[in-house]
Length: 143
Image (cartoon, rainbow, N blue to C red; front, side, top):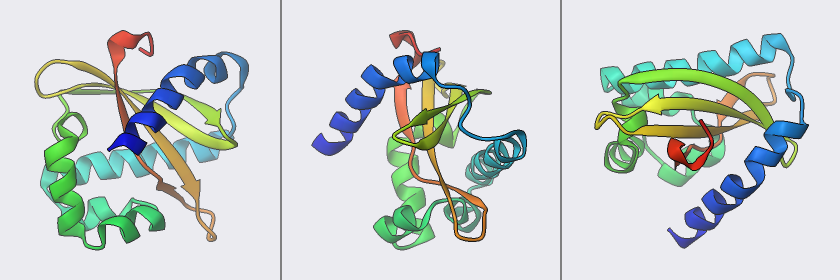
């Protein structure tokens, strides 16, 4: 948990600078593909389809959680805004440490605004997978 706090803090302090100085690190086709991967995972959460949601996660995430059911338990417990969003708005893709990060503005089930940061990983076959999801209160200037 401490490591996650450090990562979120780093993203919070570095993302606004990166977002202001970097143009999108990916082309239009990749932006569409990245959005589709995230939309598929969000849709799978809505259907409680653990297998489909897990399939959108990068191999390192799959290895960490080992099974689709364990992954869904973690999402239900700690990621309610992405598990049951009221509203989802895709924002820009920024580059962080050489990797694209999709910013997604979400209104969570409790009505709270959240910025979800999705680091994306290109796979050997050229497809994109989700390398993580970091939730930051949107009131922190990231909306």
